[in-house]
Length: 176
Image 1: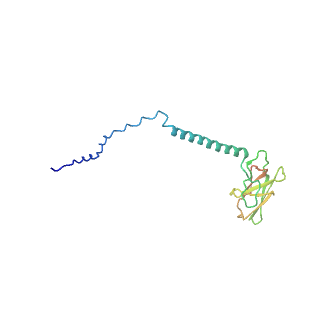
Image 2: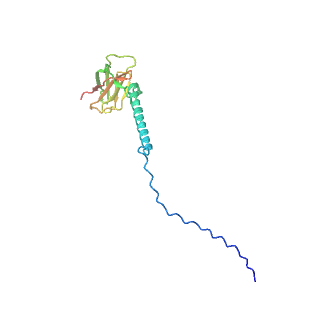
Image 3: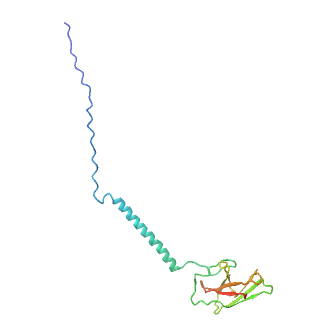
């Protein structure tokens, strides 16, 4: 009889264990009050502090300008537009005794005035009254306006400039 040799049985095929059923993830528990808001509160506080510092810086600049004053011109060359100083000076004399003399052909007017208390360095700011932005400066108490239409009324405003201050203007006109 033939002999049968028994062969060992093949190992069972590996089987993958069945996947566990999906489980629901529970929502995270809410953070304790105030902990989640920390970054927002910190950003808000930083914004407020920066805003306060900016307001203080602007305020400091304004105070410095008010205390020190803005730079200004006290004299300028012909044809320029001087500022005439920083303020109308209290107690600064105003030009007086203004007069206007028309040339025989009527095309020029000579304006004169006096300074009741002249000091070294005094200057006079003047402009035709119809164009006050075209102010000019002179150390003299006399100016000549040319190019006048004969028979027209011509006026100038003249103010004394001294030590960065300007007097109130004096208006001088030709007679109509």
